[in-house]
Image 1 (spheres, rainbow over the protein chains, first blue to last red):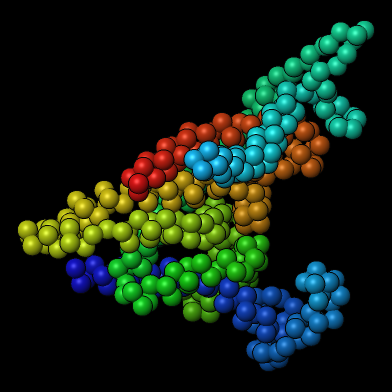
Image 2 (image 1 turned 180 degrees about the vertical axis):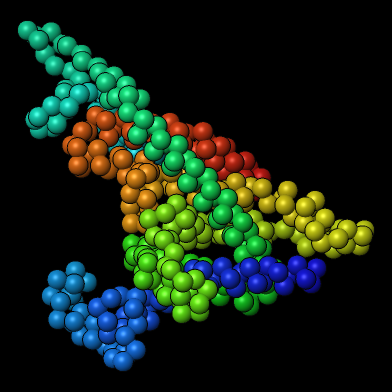
Length: 66
Length: 297
């Protein structure tokens, strides 16, 4: 019973990683300075630049009912 | 008292029936009816089914939308491709989801709600955003290629995006919780005493699993598989964003006929044929649900 329990637990952990990798990568790269979404600009990151841009984007703010 | 109770019961059953009638049956009949007309440049852009000629009713039924689907091999190949993608994705979901559901069902009572929460939590992010995130992971200068390149595993970026592989990833990713949740609901109800008895009688875990757990979990497997397979056949967003441009899935063909070609009759015929393709699995699913309900009572 024990080794099987370990195997399914590893499967569960890997499955959860699979479910969260895109979400985590999205969060991480939101702090990226580069205009190329997935190329990490190490010299100027992390930055809140895109959050500042978001705060000045009227269209997104109205869409979010703010 | 009896009478009002019966009335109340009928009312409770009547509301969902009315809901289905108004929001499913009537739209379906409208689509069904449009599929038997021909395109014309007018509003609405299809020929009427019933018109009046010199005071006499005149029925016009056209089969051209259906026959058209068989003149161009693109349609048949899209249907087959959609069935293939849905089948492969369902099997992958099952292979990934079953061990996960099993592990959750066997985990401690304290961690179980947390694990279930983790399975459902991705739904709190927009479906579209999660598919876009996969573009960022899979594209040529995306995260996966950058990591593999920097580790020296590969020397040229792998073409991952716009492949069948990307579509499978997208569909498996988006529908995995729909496989895990019914499987968990089934596996959680199993009596551990049966496995203990099997162990006492000398069965190895693998044999006990094959003889006890697997057969008992077939309703869960079927429910999960259909919950993945049925929407995957008509999937539109995932193959459009991640898939090959040269091989369309039928959901994309349907949308192109409707919005690009403005050919409502052909779009309707495509929709009716998708439904016909799915009617067998849907009927199986309903029969299974009924049997489960009966078993529960």
